[in-house]
Image 1 (cartoon, one colour):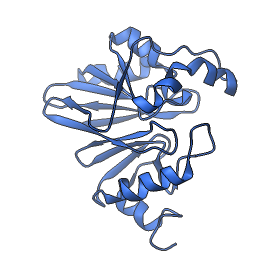
Image 2 (cartoon, rainbow, N blue to C red; image 1 turned 45 degrees about the horizontal axis):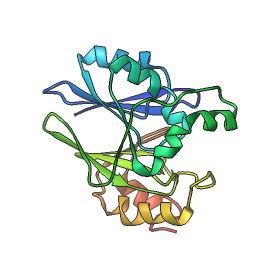
Image 3 (cartoon, rainbow, N blue to C red; image 1 turned 90 degrees about the vertical axis):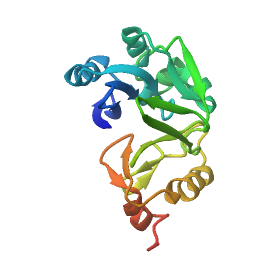
Length: 209
């Protein structure tokens, strides 16, 4: 699996492009900005997008998805717990004063039992509420696309509407930290890390705290 990181949008959130090397099928995760920079990656690898997926529906991760949908003809997928948040994108952007973005027109939902396939590869859903009610992480082999749940040395904010520190704590401790230490974490912002590193050093979850 090829995983390309594309910082995009007004807050430079990480868009991820996953490409199956055999079939060239691709998934676009968290399209927060211009489709052109994502399309550059697709063209470079000769990849054909199959899914537009979301780790959650905050504006900085989804503002480009209407354009992506128009360019690809694909539906947009979000966890059922964040569907209303995505549908209310215009309200989000007005509240934060970041423009007048429109939500995608075809939104489909998934849950923790959903598995997306790229060739013979599986993208598994881990529901990790806390940052938003419908926040998820996507597990692909030894890679975890963690959205705004888990970062290098920190965790997602819980002071927005629908956030919960107790929920995000439970999601991290009882779901993500049960994964293998060597799994690489690809967060929604900034640098990569590993599950093992975060288990050891991430306050307030690290073993040394």
